[in-house]
Image (cartoon, rainbow, N blue to C red; front, side, top):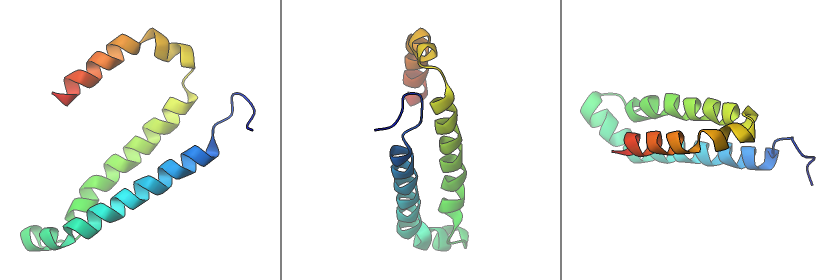
Length: 86
């Protein structure tokens, strides 16, 4: 059991592994299309990779953010999320 206030490294590692698996899936599913349309088999992975890195950075920032701050801004964050989905 981990001490309170410390990150769950197993969950963090699992998230990283799943992100890498997702990037491999994107590459394996799109390299032929990227080669045919853009003459670059890495076209789609080069577009997806920076977003995965940004997501990892935001994850680390979110881990360091105090929990009461989430509670305070829950409704505006939810509305912003719904707005970006539409």
